[in-house]
Image (cartoon, rainbow, N blue to C red; front, side, top):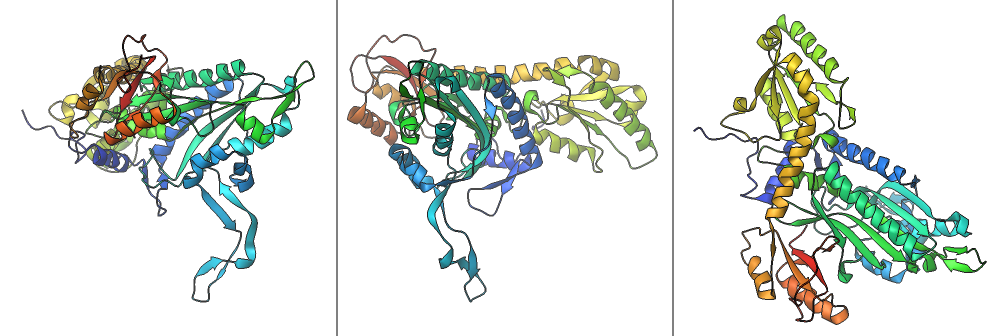
Length: 512
């Protein structure tokens, strides 16, 4: 059997980190910007983000949340009101101190000493403080609650170690912020947002996740409770793909978000925040990508079907293009996954094989390659991107009559969405093991060259110094606690860290 040809020079099993970077480059998703930790998101990568944004925005609005926008610059004094919150972000904050530049006399520019700001401005790392100030103005009575807003924006966190889509100094996200009359209502919203993220990841991204509560040491700065969805990447590491936080009344007290209840008494509101970001795109790459590049779930693919006419630059091209255009028009009238099919006819000049490989690397769900003979015979050659290569590229193409393909196109697209999720779900379930002692846990991660996935253990949920001791033991093994699954089975033994009676199950893993 001839060797299988792959589109990428690096295989996942050889160097997963390098493979990831190569997928981004070869799929033309993003590139370096000239500013450390910041990226230019190219049309294909941004097209995927636009699909995620559009579909997520529909869910957010369906929950009664209203979109708005808050400033990029936040006065330092806003953060000073919330000491614990500031401490959590202090090392990542970008600060603006001047509003003008002047020449330095040497042909360069420097901040004008006469243009120093009276108060430094923080470039938005998150918006609890500035939104809290607005909520304090907007909320006066119990009739104003719940107040639920969301914004789509960029944020800046000055990361020391960056990786495209996963951890960048500037990234795109949505952040929801809500205020409620009491804890019960706020917790309902916190868990509603978590469930929205879980279902979105699995339905739209075809990315199975575990939803659960983060341990005390992993809480959002200033939060009472933090919940997350955790996804398993193909190298066995965990990726936190979305978070939802119950903030209690701490932020309300700092910002002065008070309301008069039905009895006429002043009360502090209970607030929440929740968010997802372009990190989801990185999760899609590492969940679904293969040694030929990206594989995009049809729900978020900018183009679900790409038609590639095999142009010869002769008189036959006109008839071939007409045939392909007729096919495109027949396809875009059909609905798959509750939306019209998104179909591109790629008329660009160039060799068909090169164009095919380009779309393979981008991960478009269905590729149709059509030559002059196909057009004359009323046929198409179909390639499903979710299928592994056989012996050579052509072995993966299926020849169909045009009418037959049009009749089954919707089924093919919907089946690709289902099959990608099933494949990822199988990998997740196959790579979760259990350990009954700390030694067993350590042994599972003893081989640095092997990715063991996640390990489930029982623990006593220690706090304070006892928790810090656990964190340090795990840190020595390059491990972190991911979350306590909401659907975990009851405990039956002792904590693998302290020996005390266990109270819940947690997942431990290496992570991004």
